Image 1 (cartoon, rainbow, N blue to C red):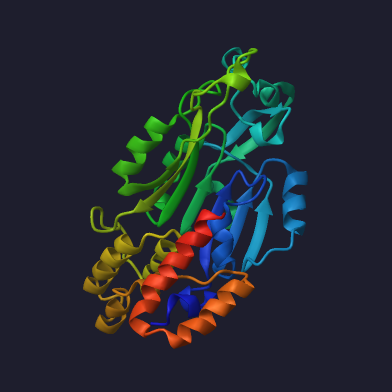
Image 2 (cartoon, rainbow, N blue to C red; image 1 turned 45 degrees about the vertical axis):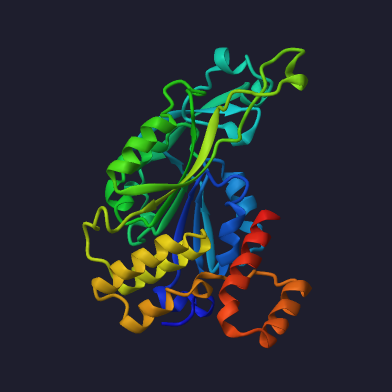
Length: 322
């Protein structure tokens, strides 16, 4: 097996297929570190936004953006167009609740329109695509979308969800519901960002010390040991998983999964031995700085047994700056 930093999209069946549901803005920065391996498929109900995203120059292996609304069933829905495009939803914002906070203007309605929405299984462009990772920011519809595509979820390595900790939209599914579903499907919670605190409306907002957390972003990774896959694993899928673990810094978990893949005959004993060294999991920066190039040169004069710990420390330092 090649070192992870030498893997090409062709080595892993054409690349890692990343589905971005709610593609306004851009995927989290850490996906850009492995952009040459990523086939990005983004969804946003706003056709103009999809066209804007498609024109961006990126390093992804491939990218396309589809102007479809997604839901837990295929049919006609009302799209609630709010002041901020990032808050558009097929669910009405709970303005009585949201107006208690300083950011409520983002949710004020500017109009509605009837739109067709689809389940993932009914999107013809996805019929022959196996999804490896999925990011969902669908304004309260994350759980219905996942429940309507369970076979796809069962083949995912990683899922990212952005969900409310309370109902900011009427009928929104919240984090506690998502967590029950993800645990049942064999995923573990590997990262969570709850630092989305919004002040109450009022003159004391600038002086407040603590504010209520209204939503969170979570990273879920499939635990193949705890819940074996329903369908047979392939070597390509196992290599994709190892690369995703490395990208997310899950070294010890990755080593455990590598042992599982070896047991299933997907990687050789020699390849398994490589994963015991932390340097195996350290991916290069997409844009090496002068400092990093200098460090690489300096490592030539350092005993090799120290390379792994030095590389790991540098990676953590770079992460702290992003």
